[in-house]
Length: 339
Ligand SMILES: Cc1cc2nc3c(=O)[nH]c(=O)nc-3n(C[C@H](O)[C@H](O)[C@H](O)COP(=O)(O)O)c2cc1C
Image (cartoon, rainbow, N blue to C red; front, side, top):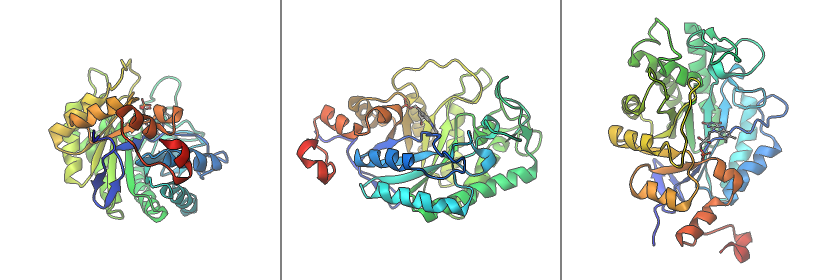
């Protein structure tokens, strides 16, 4: 049987050897609280490259210091960060993986000392800080920070940039009517709520002509919140702007009860893929080769993103190949034990 999971996927000039993507996962391991890569990152990401993951997306990486989720997040707010990422990229590439980085700003979900910023002065919940409502100047600086982050990611040699517009972080806060109560051109209508993301994409595209993904929260699980249909419109706009793929996650904008089960977000990916006619990634409780193959064969997504299963099993591509009855190449050094 020839599987879709292990067939290559090409976007622009980047060809992934299979459809398996390691989803971004914060490691909170930048121990010196300066955003720099540490040995943990080198070991953790390189292991998944050895395990034959097609594309590895490095965790949410803050474009400003104030935009970190925690003090131990990775950062790309300074040119000093480029060297560490360049080394990490070359370590992953040595094993045939393509490499991505998720550029992020935590907005009102930053758990840091000092002032935090968001579209409106509304706290996420009673335990978290109330953010300052961003001025036009703050917005301009943030867009510039995403642009600079992209420039640095390009210098480090990444193949893919993913904008973090999900999980209730800054860009998502602007998109959602639940967290954006602004009365200027950045709030109100969906065009206005989309404006920050539009300008972030424009900024990034002015310095990056490589592959661009955007991660969204396609469902907010709230009566007045956004649903996958709203994201069909946003995704059409993103497509017009030259975004290559929508990585379809959900939740995190406001506290909500979410009923999770295997593949629970896959229908959102399907809705966006069919509705906006743009490639998508499916994520969320995808754990088996058969499940991944079903998603791809039924054209519910173009790529499958795995997070926790890849923490449990860094060699998951091999596990999935065994399950699907196919043989995949492994590292030469492991030849005697791989198949
Ligand atoms: C330890 C951990 C850290 C995460 N950090 C991020 C992150 O940096 N950016 C992001 O978009 N999602 C993050 N997520 C969410 C995952 O990318 C993924 O969407 C989610 O875990 C569901 O997929 P899974 O069921 O395969 O784990 C994180 C998840 C975990 C478990």
